[in-house]
Image 1: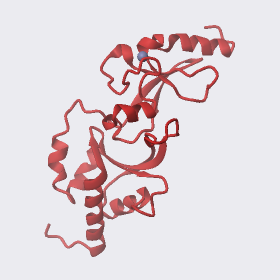
Image 2: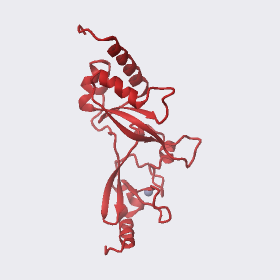
Image 3: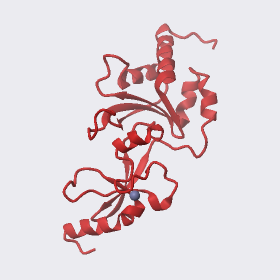
Image 4: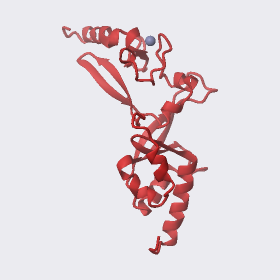
Length: 208
Ligand SMILES: [Zn+2]
């Protein structure tokens, strides 16, 4: 690079390259960097990463994203954090500062997953499609971690992250006594959400 680069830009580049090397997650949709809420004392927060990306003129968004609970805390809530995301189409703005990334991007298989974990949610008025706000590395979680995050079928323990078998897609089938708690089941175990949709429709008094 022949052009003169301001020292503060150079410093931002160093920080971003090191952050991506240690915690970047790359997939079909782009690159993601997750930070647990309240991590600021030890690491750069999502907002600080964003400031560096602005200096480097790399477009990004910050979204809320959840990670599986800690192993020691069964039945504990998911860990909330913020994820800095750079869309795949914008990665060229980043490879300018981190040329080694080009090869890694080229190696992403076309059938690679993206950011979204999509599920079906039966509602009285019909079937909705919902995206879970998960940290981008959800496909790499162990089955135990996925179970703690509720990503296996509550009935048969099938790993719902596969998305290969169309008869076993994830549906949100809540227990009548816990209507506010998400509970996923595979299509085979819940008749593809149809019974649940009917139950909810009857609750609201609408004819189904
Ligand atoms: Zn099942």
